[in-house]
Amino acid sequence: MLNASRRLFIRAFAFGATTVAAGRAIAAPSDGHAAGYDVAPASDFLPTIPRKPGDPVVFTASLDKAPIKATSGGWAREITTRGLPIATDIAGAHLFLNPGGAREMHWHDSAEWAYIVDGHCQVTVLDSEGVTEVVNLAPGDLWYFPQGHSHAIQTLGSKPCHAILAFDDGLYSEHGTFGISDWMSRYDAASLSQALGVSANAFTAIPKAETYIMQGGVLALDGPHARMARPLARERSHRYALMAHKPKVATAGGELYIASEKEFPLSTTLTGMVLRLKAGAMHEPHWHPDANEWHYVLKGRTRVTLFGTDKRVATAELSPGECAYIPRNCGHSIKNIGSEDAEMVGVLDSGTYRENTLTDWVTKAPRHLLANNLGLPEAAVPSFPRPRTIVPASAQG
Image (cartoon, rainbow, N blue to C red; front, side, top):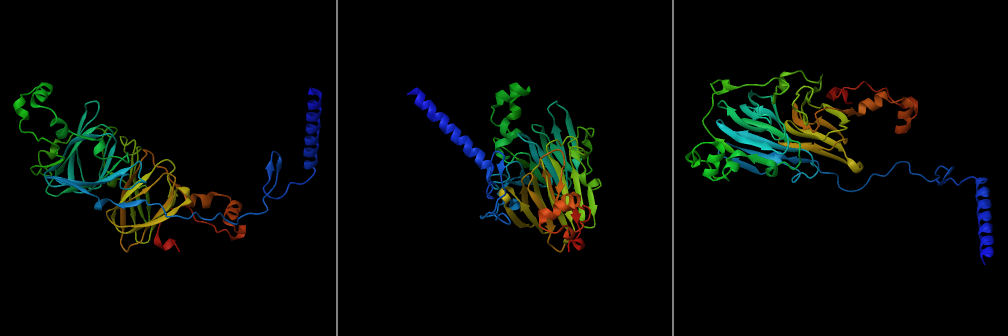
C-alpha cells in the first residue's frame, strides 16, 4: 500500500514538472499575468483612472458664527474638531477684550499662539521654572505660550484689543483649560489661608466661579502699568513682532510673512504666518509635508482649492470671519477672488516651515518625464517659468 502511494506521488510530481517546463516555452498572455518571473503587460487597460464619486470633504467653517462665551470684560469664540471634524490637530479662536478687560491667569494642556489684529495688550507669563515675563503687544505682534505656561492678557489703552488664536490640539476647549478663579473658588477659605499664608478673611469676597474675562479699570497705553513690562531675551520671550520684519516672500502679487521656530525660538510647535494677496493673485498650488495648516480670513474674499486624501478635490470660497483647515500633505492653493486686497492669518502645527510646490515639480523634472506624465509629445511640453510662490494676477493667463 505504501509503495503504491509512493508511485502515485512520483508520477504526479513528474507530470507537474513537465507542465511547468512546457509553460515556459509558451509566451504568457498579455493580460497582466504574473507568476514569479512569468509576467506580461496588460492588454485591457484604462486611459485614466476614473475619479471617485461622492461628496467633497468639508474643510472650512465660520469661526465668527460660532457660539460666543462672554463675561464682563470681553468675549471669545472657538472652532474645534467638534465643529469642523477634519480639524483634528489645530483649533482656532477669536478673543476680544474691552478697554480695561483682562483674560484671567490660566494655562492649557496645549500650546497657544495668537496674532494681534487690533489694539494693544499686556501679557504676563510664568514659565515652568518660575520665570516671569511681562510684555506689551501691538497690532501685528504674536504671542506663544508653551503647554502649561500660565498666562494672562490685559488690554492697554482706550481701544479694545482683539486677536486670532490657535492651539496645537484640535480638541482644545474647556476640557484642557485651567483658570485661577475657577480653581481657587473650589477651595474653602481656611484651605486657601493655609496654602497661601494669609488670613482667611482675604478670600471671603473672591468670586465663587470662573471670571474668565473680567472688566476692570482702563490702563493707559503709556501709563505706569504699561511701563512695568519686563521682556525676556529673544530665546525665551513669548512675544514676536512678526509684521515688523521683512516678509519671507514678496512679489507683485503679495507677501508671505513667516514666524517659525527659527525666527521665534520659543514657538516650537506652531509656525505663524500672514498671507497678503493682491486682487487676482494666488498662493500657488503647494503642500506642507509635515504640518497641518489652519488659517482665518481677516479681509477680502478667497477661493481655496484642496486636493485631499482619498483623491478628493474640494473648493470653498471664504469671507472675513471664516477659516480653513488643510491636512498635512494635501495639495492646496489660495486665490484672491475679490476686487480688494485679501489678508489671512494662521499657523502650521510644526516649528519648522516647509513647503513643496507644483511649480518646483514642473520646472525641475526632466521634460521627457513630464511629457509621459501629461500625455504630451515632448516638444509640446511648455517651458515653465521659475517658482514664484505668490503669483500676480497678470501672470495667470
